[in-house]
Amino acid sequence: MEKIPTSIGLIMDGNRRWARQHSLPSFEGHRAGYEKLKECIVWAREAGVRSVFVYAFSTENWKRSPEEIAKLLELMDWALKHEEALFKKEQVHITFVGQRERLPKTLQESMKRVEETTKDGIIRLFVGLSYGGRAEIVDTAKRIARMENSADITEADFAAQLWTCGMPDPELIIRTGGERRLSNFLLWQGAYAELYFSDTYWPDFSKEEFIKILNYFSTREQREGA
Ligand code: FPP
Image (cartoon, rainbow, N blue to C red; front, top):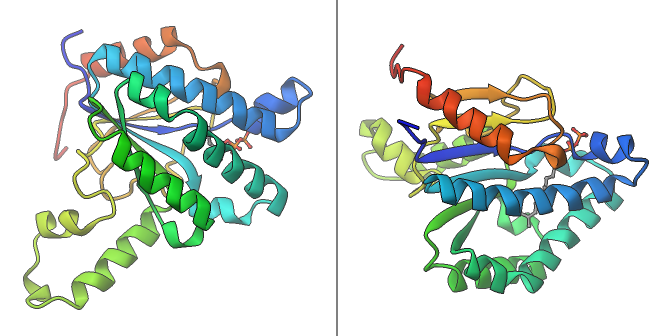
């Protein structure tokens, strides 16, 4: 492959439809989705990708049933408490992006701990938790408005204040599950990203398909500004 994307974004859609297809409760779809995410990070690292941003819980996801929200957040809490050694072994440096204050205190503590203990990892995993592109841009605009010389800010200054500060913009965004929309995902950062939409439900996503998408990316001309 000639050109590997340095940074990719993943919209892991189709967990509940996968669960329904297998006559399982929704939660089993999210659990299978989490297992797939772990596999996909290893494929990405092996291919030479340096940074992955995943949509694990969007600002819109707060509208789901209290039971589903609780189960999803419990899954994350469980993963951070029980799989820290695995993240370290796989050399994954995890950073959380989003409205932390809306999350349970215990989860916030686990997030902080894992960010610290995985910081020597070689592939960055940015996990969007209570993340939304518009909320991020509005929050950033408010903070900038309070700064001195805010009228003179540049695009680079604005980007440096975003919640994702330090993350390279995604060159490729993959959305599974058949929808062809961005749904509030990395609205600023994805301005020049190549978009790839797959009909596969996220838990069925395979290494073959991932490599096929990387090959597709490498054959595309990067036409920034087009
Ligand atoms: C979208 O599918 C997926 C989610 C809302 C949750 C994704 C979360 C994970 C895979 C767990 C991540 C865990 C950690 C620790 C990072 P959907 O529920 O919208 O499915 P549907 O489109 O079939 O309804």
